[in-house]
Amino acid sequence: MATTTFRTETDVVLIGAGIMSATLGLLLKELNPKIKIEIYERLDVAAAESSDAWNNAGTGHSAFCELNYTPQLENGEIETKKAVKIAESFEVSKQFWAYLVEKNLISHPENFIKSIPHMSFVWGEENVDFLKKRFEALQQFNLFKGMEYSEDTEQIKSWMPLVMEGRRASQAFAATSMKIGTDVNFGELTRNIFDYLKTLEGVDMYFHHDVKKLKKQEDGRWRIKSKDLSNGDIRKVRTNFVFIGAGGGSLPLLEKAGIPEGNGFGGFPVSGQWLKCINEEVIEKHNAKVYGKASVGAPPMSVPHIDSRMIDGKKALLFGPYAGFSTKFLKNGSYLDLPLSIKLNNMIPMLSAGFQNLPLTKYLIDQVRQSPEDRLQALREYLPDAKMEDWVLEHAGQRVQVIKKGEHGGGVLEFGTEVVTAADGSLAVLLGASPGASTAVSIMLDLIKRCFSEHEKASVWQEKLKKMIPSYGVSLNENEALLEEVRNHSAAVLKLAKL
Image 1 (tube, rainbow, N blue to C red):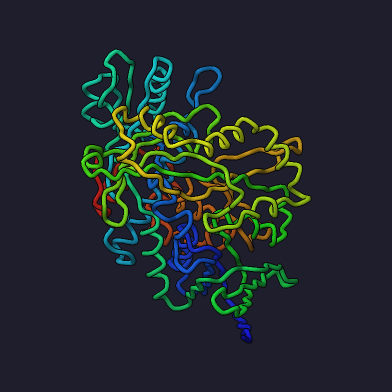
Image 2: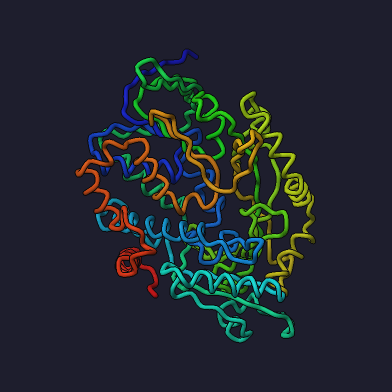
Protein backbone atom coordinates (compact mmCIF):
# COMPACT_ATOMS: atom_id res chain seq x y z
CA MET A 1 0.00 0.00 0.00
CA ALA A 2 1.40 3.41 -0.97
CA THR A 3 2.18 5.81 1.84
CA THR A 4 1.42 9.53 1.86
CA THR A 5 3.75 12.24 3.13
CA PHE A 6 2.23 15.25 4.91
CA ARG A 7 4.14 18.49 5.53
CA THR A 8 3.14 21.09 8.10
CA GLU A 9 4.48 24.16 9.91
CA THR A 10 3.84 24.90 13.58
CA ASP A 11 5.19 26.89 16.52
CA VAL A 12 5.50 24.08 19.07
CA VAL A 13 5.77 20.29 18.88
CA LEU A 14 5.10 18.21 21.98
CA ILE A 15 6.27 14.59 21.86
CA GLY A 16 4.47 12.28 24.29
CA ALA A 17 0.86 12.67 25.47
CA GLY A 18 1.48 12.52 29.22
CA ILE A 19 0.94 14.97 32.07
CA MET A 20 4.07 17.00 31.19
CA SER A 21 3.06 17.71 27.58
CA ALA A 22 -0.53 18.37 28.63
CA THR A 23 0.61 20.88 31.25
CA LEU A 24 3.05 22.68 28.96
CA GLY A 25 0.59 22.77 26.08
CA LEU A 26 -2.14 24.32 28.19
CA LEU A 27 0.19 26.83 29.86
CA LEU A 28 1.46 28.01 26.48
CA LYS A 29 -2.05 28.21 25.02
CA GLU A 30 -3.24 30.28 27.99
CA LEU A 31 -0.24 32.59 27.68
CA ASN A 32 -0.56 32.92 23.91
CA PRO A 33 -3.93 31.79 22.46
CA LYS A 34 -2.59 32.20 18.90
CA ILE A 35 0.27 29.72 19.34
CA LYS A 36 0.09 26.64 17.07
CA ILE A 37 0.83 23.28 18.71
CA GLU A 38 1.15 19.74 17.34
CA ILE A 39 1.24 16.77 19.75
CA TYR A 40 2.63 13.35 18.78
CA GLU A 41 2.01 10.14 20.75
CA ARG A 42 3.22 6.64 19.85
CA LEU A 43 0.28 4.89 21.54
CA ASP A 44 -3.37 5.26 20.53
CA VAL A 45 -4.50 7.05 23.73
CA ALA A 46 -3.18 9.76 26.03
CA ALA A 47 -1.60 9.04 29.41
CA ALA A 48 -1.16 5.31 28.83
CA GLU A 49 2.41 5.07 30.14
CA SER A 50 3.81 6.90 33.22
CA SER A 51 0.72 9.07 33.72
CA ASP A 52 -1.70 6.13 33.87
CA ALA A 53 -3.22 5.47 37.30
CA TRP A 54 -1.88 1.91 37.52
CA ASN A 55 1.61 3.00 36.47
CA ASN A 56 2.37 5.51 39.24
CA ALA A 57 1.86 5.93 42.96
CA GLY A 58 -1.06 8.35 42.60
CA THR A 59 0.26 10.27 45.57
CA GLY A 60 0.09 14.02 45.30
CA HIS A 61 3.80 14.12 46.17
CA SER A 62 4.10 16.90 48.72
CA ALA A 63 6.81 15.33 50.95
CA PHE A 64 4.36 14.96 53.84
CA CYS A 65 4.97 11.21 54.10
CA GLU A 66 7.73 10.24 51.67
CA LEU A 67 10.76 9.58 53.87
CA ASN A 68 13.20 9.37 50.95
CA TYR A 69 12.80 13.13 50.42
CA THR A 70 14.32 13.77 53.87
CA PRO A 71 17.49 11.67 54.13
CA GLN A 72 19.45 11.55 57.37
CA LEU A 73 22.98 12.91 56.95
CA GLU A 74 26.10 11.35 58.44
CA ASN A 75 26.05 13.90 61.27
CA GLY A 76 22.53 12.76 62.21
CA GLU A 77 20.76 15.87 60.88
CA ILE A 78 17.77 15.63 58.54
CA GLU A 79 18.14 17.13 55.06
CA THR A 80 14.96 19.12 54.33
CA LYS A 81 15.80 21.11 51.19
CA LYS A 82 14.26 18.66 48.71
CA ALA A 83 11.13 18.15 50.83
CA VAL A 84 10.47 21.89 51.03
CA LYS A 85 10.93 22.30 47.27
CA ILE A 86 8.55 19.41 46.48
CA ALA A 87 5.92 20.61 48.98
CA GLU A 88 5.96 24.08 47.45
CA SER A 89 5.84 22.68 43.91
CA PHE A 90 2.72 20.66 44.70
CA GLU A 91 0.99 23.79 46.03
CA VAL A 92 1.79 25.41 42.66
CA SER A 93 0.20 22.44 40.86
CA LYS A 94 -2.97 22.73 42.95
CA GLN A 95 -3.22 26.46 42.17
CA PHE A 96 -3.04 25.76 38.44
CA TRP A 97 -5.60 22.95 38.62
CA ALA A 98 -7.94 25.21 40.64
CA TYR A 99 -7.57 27.88 37.93
CA LEU A 100 -8.51 25.35 35.25
CA VAL A 101 -11.61 24.31 37.17
CA GLU A 102 -12.67 27.91 37.93
CA LYS A 103 -12.36 28.83 34.26
CA ASN A 104 -14.32 25.70 33.23
CA LEU A 105 -11.41 24.46 31.16
CA ILE A 106 -11.71 21.13 32.98
CA SER A 107 -14.54 19.95 35.21
CA HIS A 108 -15.35 17.55 38.04
CA PRO A 109 -12.13 17.84 40.06
CA GLU A 110 -13.35 15.01 42.30
CA ASN A 111 -12.64 12.66 39.39
CA PHE A 112 -8.90 13.36 39.46
CA ILE A 113 -8.06 14.58 42.99
CA LYS A 114 -9.32 13.59 46.43
CA SER A 115 -8.27 14.29 50.01
CA ILE A 116 -6.65 11.46 51.89
CA PRO A 117 -4.32 11.61 54.91
CA HIS A 118 -0.61 11.20 54.18
CA MET A 119 1.14 9.18 56.89
CA SER A 120 4.60 7.86 57.65
CA PHE A 121 4.98 4.73 59.78
CA VAL A 122 8.13 3.17 61.24
CA TRP A 123 9.05 0.62 63.90
CA GLY A 124 12.21 -0.06 65.92
CA GLU A 125 14.08 2.41 68.15
CA GLU A 126 16.43 3.68 65.44
CA ASN A 127 13.64 4.38 62.96
CA VAL A 128 11.47 5.99 65.64
CA ASP A 129 14.34 8.33 66.45
CA PHE A 130 14.67 9.18 62.74
CA LEU A 131 10.97 9.95 62.32
CA LYS A 132 10.92 12.16 65.40
CA LYS A 133 13.92 14.12 64.13
CA ARG A 134 12.27 14.41 60.71
CA PHE A 135 9.06 15.73 62.22
CA GLU A 136 10.94 18.29 64.34
CA ALA A 137 13.07 19.40 61.38
CA LEU A 138 9.99 19.95 59.18
CA GLN A 139 8.13 21.95 61.81
CA GLN A 140 10.34 24.98 61.15
CA PHE A 141 8.69 25.29 57.71
CA ASN A 142 5.21 26.76 57.20
CA LEU A 143 4.46 24.19 54.48
CA PHE A 144 4.46 21.40 57.09
CA LYS A 145 2.46 23.09 59.84
CA GLY A 146 -0.48 20.90 60.78
CA MET A 147 1.50 17.65 60.69
CA GLU A 148 0.94 15.43 63.75
CA TYR A 149 3.45 13.07 65.36
CA SER A 150 2.72 10.18 67.71
CA GLU A 151 4.38 7.22 69.40
CA ASP A 152 1.13 6.31 71.17
CA THR A 153 -0.18 2.94 70.02
CA GLU A 154 -3.84 3.88 70.47
CA GLN A 155 -3.41 7.13 68.55
CA ILE A 156 -1.66 5.34 65.69
CA LYS A 157 -4.42 2.69 65.68
CA SER A 158 -7.00 5.42 65.17
CA TRP A 159 -5.02 6.71 62.17
CA MET A 160 -4.29 3.37 60.50
CA PRO A 161 -6.28 0.52 62.10
CA LEU A 162 -5.49 -2.02 59.39
CA VAL A 163 -1.74 -1.44 59.72
CA MET A 164 -1.87 -1.92 63.49
CA GLU A 165 -3.90 -5.15 63.46
CA GLY A 166 -1.89 -8.08 64.85
CA ARG A 167 1.09 -6.05 66.10
CA ARG A 168 2.94 -6.73 69.36
CA ALA A 169 2.32 -3.94 71.86
CA SER A 170 5.90 -4.22 73.13
CA GLN A 171 7.39 -2.97 69.85
CA ALA A 172 8.33 0.70 69.43
CA PHE A 173 6.23 2.52 66.80
CA ALA A 174 6.00 6.06 65.50
CA ALA A 175 3.84 7.76 62.88
CA THR A 176 3.09 11.14 61.41
CA SER A 177 -0.15 12.24 59.83
CA MET A 178 -1.06 15.14 57.56
CA LYS A 179 -4.76 15.35 56.81
CA ILE A 180 -4.42 17.62 53.74
CA GLY A 181 -2.68 14.93 51.69
CA THR A 182 -4.19 13.97 48.33
CA ASP A 183 -4.68 11.08 45.94
CA VAL A 184 -4.34 12.12 42.30
CA ASN A 185 -5.36 10.23 39.18
CA PHE A 186 -2.88 11.78 36.77
CA GLY A 187 -4.23 9.75 33.88
CA GLU A 188 -7.70 11.24 34.32
CA LEU A 189 -6.27 14.74 34.72
CA THR A 190 -4.09 14.38 31.63
CA ARG A 191 -6.96 13.18 29.45
CA ASN A 192 -9.17 16.03 30.71
CA ILE A 193 -6.54 18.59 29.71
CA PHE A 194 -6.05 17.06 26.26
CA ASP A 195 -9.82 16.87 25.73
CA TYR A 196 -9.92 20.63 26.26
CA LEU A 197 -6.79 21.35 24.18
CA LYS A 198 -8.24 19.46 21.20
CA THR A 199 -11.16 21.90 21.09
CA LEU A 200 -8.85 24.88 20.60
CA GLU A 201 -7.92 26.39 17.27
CA GLY A 202 -4.30 25.71 16.36
CA VAL A 203 -3.95 22.46 18.35
CA ASP A 204 -3.59 19.13 16.52
CA MET A 205 -3.01 15.72 18.12
CA TYR A 206 -1.57 12.73 16.30
CA PHE A 207 -1.93 9.40 18.07
CA HIS A 208 -0.22 6.21 16.90
CA HIS A 209 2.62 8.34 15.50
CA ASP A 210 6.20 7.31 16.18
CA VAL A 211 8.80 10.08 15.90
CA LYS A 212 11.64 8.76 13.75
CA LYS A 213 13.92 11.78 13.21
CA LEU A 214 14.65 15.18 14.72
CA LYS A 215 17.04 17.51 12.95
CA LYS A 216 18.06 21.09 13.58
CA GLN A 217 18.01 23.16 10.38
CA GLU A 218 20.32 26.03 9.47
CA ASP A 219 17.59 28.57 10.18
CA GLY A 220 17.39 27.33 13.80
CA ARG A 221 14.09 25.52 13.38
CA TRP A 222 13.57 21.79 13.90
CA ARG A 223 12.41 19.32 11.29
CA ILE A 224 10.60 16.31 12.72
CA LYS A 225 9.64 13.17 10.87
CA SER A 226 7.03 10.78 12.28
CA LYS A 227 5.36 7.63 11.01
CA ASP A 228 1.68 6.78 11.38
CA LEU A 229 1.84 3.26 12.79
CA SER A 230 -1.67 2.42 11.57
CA ASN A 231 -1.06 3.00 7.84
CA GLY A 232 2.62 3.86 7.36
CA ASP A 233 2.00 7.48 6.31
CA ILE A 234 4.83 9.92 6.97
CA ARG A 235 4.35 13.32 8.55
CA LYS A 236 7.05 15.99 8.39
CA VAL A 237 6.73 19.15 10.44
CA ARG A 238 8.93 22.20 10.90
CA THR A 239 8.74 23.98 14.23
CA ASN A 240 10.39 26.66 16.35
CA PHE A 241 10.31 24.65 19.58
CA VAL A 242 10.25 20.98 20.57
CA PHE A 243 9.43 19.49 23.97
CA ILE A 244 10.13 15.81 24.52
CA GLY A 245 8.09 14.50 27.43
CA ALA A 246 7.89 10.85 26.42
CA GLY A 247 8.75 9.23 29.76
CA GLY A 248 11.17 6.37 29.18
CA GLY A 249 11.12 7.21 25.47
CA SER A 250 12.72 10.61 26.05
CA LEU A 251 16.35 9.45 26.19
CA PRO A 252 16.41 7.81 22.72
CA LEU A 253 14.79 10.95 21.27
CA LEU A 254 17.35 13.18 23.02
CA GLU A 255 20.06 11.08 21.38
CA LYS A 256 18.37 11.47 17.98
CA ALA A 257 18.23 15.25 18.46
CA GLY A 258 22.02 15.29 18.79
CA ILE A 259 22.35 18.47 20.86
CA PRO A 260 25.73 18.83 22.65
CA GLU A 261 23.91 19.50 25.94
CA GLY A 262 22.62 15.92 25.78
CA ASN A 263 26.07 14.32 25.65
CA GLY A 264 26.83 12.01 28.56
CA PHE A 265 23.22 11.35 29.56
CA GLY A 266 22.13 7.76 29.95
CA GLY A 267 19.29 5.88 31.59
CA PHE A 268 18.84 3.02 34.04
CA PRO A 269 15.42 1.35 33.74
CA VAL A 270 13.55 0.20 36.85
CA SER A 271 10.28 -1.70 36.59
CA GLY A 272 7.60 -2.07 39.24
CA GLN A 273 4.77 -4.26 40.47
CA TRP A 274 1.94 -3.79 42.97
CA LEU A 275 0.03 -6.18 45.15
CA LYS A 276 -3.62 -5.28 44.64
CA CYS A 277 -6.20 -6.19 47.29
CA ILE A 278 -9.30 -8.01 46.02
CA ASN A 279 -11.07 -8.34 49.38
CA GLU A 280 -13.64 -5.53 49.71
CA GLU A 281 -13.73 -5.81 53.52
CA VAL A 282 -9.97 -5.26 53.77
CA ILE A 283 -10.09 -2.38 51.27
CA GLU A 284 -12.71 -0.56 53.37
CA LYS A 285 -10.64 -0.84 56.56
CA HIS A 286 -7.89 1.43 55.24
CA ASN A 287 -8.15 5.08 54.26
CA ALA A 288 -4.68 6.59 54.07
CA LYS A 289 -1.41 6.63 52.18
CA VAL A 290 1.08 5.10 54.60
CA TYR A 291 4.74 5.26 53.61
CA GLY A 292 7.61 3.46 55.31
CA LYS A 293 11.38 3.34 54.89
CA ALA A 294 12.98 1.80 51.82
CA SER A 295 15.15 -1.28 52.20
CA VAL A 296 18.91 -0.76 52.15
CA GLY A 297 20.03 -0.56 48.51
CA ALA A 298 16.53 0.09 47.16
CA PRO A 299 15.92 2.93 44.69
CA PRO A 300 13.83 5.81 46.11
CA MET A 301 10.89 4.94 43.83
CA SER A 302 10.65 1.63 45.73
CA VAL A 303 9.70 3.17 49.06
CA PRO A 304 7.01 0.75 50.33
CA HIS A 305 3.55 2.11 50.95
CA ILE A 306 0.11 0.73 51.74
CA ASP A 307 -2.07 2.92 49.70
CA SER A 308 -5.78 3.73 49.39
CA ARG A 309 -6.53 4.84 45.82
CA MET A 310 -9.49 5.86 43.71
CA ILE A 311 -9.08 4.38 40.22
CA ASP A 312 -11.83 4.52 37.60
CA GLY A 313 -14.29 5.68 40.26
CA LYS A 314 -13.65 2.71 42.54
CA LYS A 315 -11.71 2.48 45.82
CA ALA A 316 -8.59 0.31 45.58
CA LEU A 317 -5.89 -0.80 48.01
CA LEU A 318 -2.34 -1.33 46.78
CA PHE A 319 0.93 -2.31 48.40
CA GLY A 320 4.36 -1.88 46.88
CA PRO A 321 5.93 -1.13 44.61
CA TYR A 322 8.15 -4.14 44.23
CA ALA A 323 11.08 -3.01 42.12
CA GLY A 324 12.48 -5.00 39.26
CA PHE A 325 14.80 -4.77 36.31
CA SER A 326 13.94 -4.77 32.63
CA THR A 327 15.89 -3.42 29.68
CA LYS A 328 12.68 -1.77 28.42
CA PHE A 329 12.43 2.02 28.77
CA LEU A 330 8.64 1.94 28.47
CA LYS A 331 6.00 -0.53 29.62
CA ASN A 332 5.14 -0.88 25.94
CA GLY A 333 8.77 -0.64 24.88
CA SER A 334 11.43 -2.98 23.49
CA TYR A 335 13.98 -5.13 25.32
CA LEU A 336 16.58 -3.46 23.07
CA ASP A 337 15.89 0.00 24.57
CA LEU A 338 18.77 -0.11 27.07
CA PRO A 339 21.50 -1.59 24.82
CA LEU A 340 20.56 0.72 21.94
CA SER A 341 20.77 3.76 24.24
CA ILE A 342 24.50 3.19 24.88
CA LYS A 343 26.50 5.55 22.66
CA LEU A 344 30.11 6.72 22.56
CA ASN A 345 29.26 9.96 24.40
CA ASN A 346 27.55 8.24 27.35
CA MET A 347 29.36 4.90 27.52
CA ILE A 348 31.80 5.92 30.26
CA PRO A 349 29.16 7.58 32.51
CA MET A 350 26.85 4.56 32.12
CA LEU A 351 29.55 1.98 32.84
CA SER A 352 30.85 4.07 35.75
CA ALA A 353 27.36 4.50 37.24
CA GLY A 354 26.71 0.79 36.81
CA PHE A 355 29.93 -0.13 38.61
CA GLN A 356 29.22 2.32 41.46
CA ASN A 357 25.69 0.98 41.89
CA LEU A 358 26.34 -2.78 41.95
CA PRO A 359 24.34 -3.13 45.24
CA LEU A 360 21.33 -1.57 43.47
CA THR A 361 21.67 -3.97 40.56
CA LYS A 362 21.85 -6.92 42.96
CA TYR A 363 18.80 -5.59 44.84
CA LEU A 364 16.76 -5.32 41.62
CA ILE A 365 17.75 -8.82 40.50
CA ASP A 366 16.74 -10.16 43.92
CA GLN A 367 13.40 -8.37 43.57
CA VAL A 368 12.79 -10.00 40.17
CA ARG A 369 13.45 -13.42 41.68
CA GLN A 370 10.95 -12.94 44.53
CA SER A 371 8.38 -15.65 45.05
CA PRO A 372 4.74 -14.92 46.03
CA GLU A 373 5.72 -15.91 49.59
CA ASP A 374 8.55 -13.33 49.57
CA ARG A 375 6.15 -10.61 48.47
CA LEU A 376 3.63 -11.63 51.13
CA GLN A 377 6.34 -11.43 53.77
CA ALA A 378 7.13 -7.85 52.71
CA LEU A 379 3.42 -6.99 52.84
CA ARG A 380 3.13 -8.44 56.35
CA GLU A 381 5.67 -5.93 57.63
CA TYR A 382 2.90 -3.37 57.01
CA LEU A 383 -0.18 -5.57 57.41
CA PRO A 384 0.75 -8.37 59.86
CA ASP A 385 -2.55 -10.22 59.30
CA ALA A 386 -2.43 -10.13 55.47
CA LYS A 387 -3.58 -13.31 53.67
CA MET A 388 -2.26 -14.37 50.28
CA GLU A 389 -5.72 -15.06 48.86
CA ASP A 390 -6.70 -11.40 49.35
CA TRP A 391 -4.01 -10.05 47.01
CA VAL A 392 -3.06 -10.35 43.34
CA LEU A 393 -0.01 -9.08 41.46
CA GLU A 394 -0.44 -6.07 39.15
CA HIS A 395 2.27 -4.73 36.84
CA ALA A 396 3.12 -1.06 37.28
CA GLY A 397 4.99 1.27 34.92
CA GLN A 398 8.61 1.56 33.85
CA ARG A 399 10.86 4.34 35.13
CA VAL A 400 14.18 5.36 33.65
CA GLN A 401 16.50 6.88 36.23
CA VAL A 402 18.89 9.52 34.88
CA ILE A 403 22.60 8.84 34.50
CA LYS A 404 24.76 11.87 33.79
CA LYS A 405 28.40 12.89 33.82
CA GLY A 406 29.91 13.50 37.23
CA GLU A 407 32.54 16.10 38.08
CA HIS A 408 35.43 13.82 37.18
CA GLY A 409 34.00 12.34 33.99
CA GLY A 410 32.42 9.31 35.63
CA GLY A 411 28.70 8.63 35.87
CA VAL A 412 26.20 9.65 38.53
CA LEU A 413 22.84 7.91 38.95
CA GLU A 414 20.19 10.54 39.71
CA PHE A 415 16.83 9.81 41.33
CA GLY A 416 14.52 12.60 40.24
CA THR A 417 13.72 14.66 37.17
CA GLU A 418 16.13 16.49 34.90
CA VAL A 419 15.31 18.94 32.11
CA VAL A 420 17.93 19.14 29.36
CA THR A 421 17.63 22.21 27.13
CA ALA A 422 19.43 23.26 23.98
CA ALA A 423 21.58 26.38 24.39
CA ASP A 424 19.22 28.44 22.22
CA GLY A 425 16.11 27.20 24.06
CA SER A 426 14.66 25.60 20.92
CA LEU A 427 14.44 22.09 22.43
CA ALA A 428 13.80 20.75 25.92
CA VAL A 429 13.79 17.14 27.10
CA LEU A 430 12.43 15.82 30.39
CA LEU A 431 14.28 12.83 31.82
CA GLY A 432 13.77 10.88 35.03
CA ALA A 433 10.92 9.95 37.33
CA SER A 434 9.57 10.76 40.81
CA PRO A 435 8.21 13.17 41.93
CA GLY A 436 7.54 14.07 38.28
CA ALA A 437 3.79 14.32 37.76
CA SER A 438 3.05 16.05 41.07
CA THR A 439 5.52 18.81 40.29
CA ALA A 440 4.69 19.04 36.56
CA VAL A 441 3.44 22.64 36.76
CA SER A 442 6.61 23.91 38.47
CA ILE A 443 8.81 21.97 36.05
CA MET A 444 6.98 23.42 33.05
CA LEU A 445 7.02 26.96 34.46
CA ASP A 446 10.78 26.67 34.86
CA LEU A 447 11.02 25.36 31.29
CA ILE A 448 9.03 28.36 30.01
CA LYS A 449 11.37 30.68 31.89
CA ARG A 450 14.37 29.04 30.21
CA CYS A 451 13.03 28.48 26.69
CA PHE A 452 10.63 31.42 26.29
CA SER A 453 12.58 33.87 28.47
CA GLU A 454 11.81 37.07 26.52
CA HIS A 455 8.08 36.37 26.54
CA GLU A 456 8.10 35.22 30.19
CA LYS A 457 9.69 38.48 31.33
CA ALA A 458 7.14 40.61 29.47
CA SER A 459 4.39 42.19 31.57
CA VAL A 460 1.62 40.49 29.51
CA TRP A 461 2.87 36.99 30.35
CA GLN A 462 3.74 37.94 33.93
CA GLU A 463 0.18 39.15 34.45
CA LYS A 464 -1.29 35.97 33.00
CA LEU A 465 1.04 33.74 35.02
CA LYS A 466 -0.05 35.51 38.22
CA LYS A 467 -3.68 34.84 37.35
CA MET A 468 -3.00 31.15 36.84
CA ILE A 469 -0.66 30.77 39.82
CA PRO A 470 -1.20 33.56 42.39
CA SER A 471 2.06 32.67 44.17
CA TYR A 472 4.13 32.88 40.96
CA GLY A 473 7.56 34.30 41.76
CA VAL A 474 6.96 34.24 45.54
CA SER A 475 8.20 31.70 48.10
CA LEU A 476 5.14 30.22 49.79
CA ASN A 477 7.23 28.80 52.60
CA GLU A 478 8.44 32.30 53.47
CA ASN A 479 5.01 33.90 53.14
CA GLU A 480 2.68 32.25 55.65
CA ALA A 481 -0.32 34.46 54.88
CA LEU A 482 -0.12 33.81 51.13
CA LEU A 483 0.35 30.07 51.74
CA GLU A 484 -2.81 29.93 53.85
CA GLU A 485 -4.72 31.98 51.28
CA VAL A 486 -3.78 29.87 48.23
CA ARG A 487 -4.16 26.58 50.12
CA ASN A 488 -7.65 27.46 51.26
CA HIS A 489 -8.64 28.70 47.80
CA SER A 490 -7.31 25.57 46.05
CA ALA A 491 -9.02 23.37 48.62
CA ALA A 492 -12.36 25.12 48.13
CA VAL A 493 -12.26 24.89 44.32
CA LEU A 494 -10.89 21.33 44.17
CA LYS A 495 -13.17 20.13 47.02
CA LEU A 496 -10.29 19.16 49.31
CA ALA A 497 -9.78 19.05 53.09
CA LYS A 498 -8.44 22.12 54.89
CA LEU A 499 -6.21 22.32 57.94
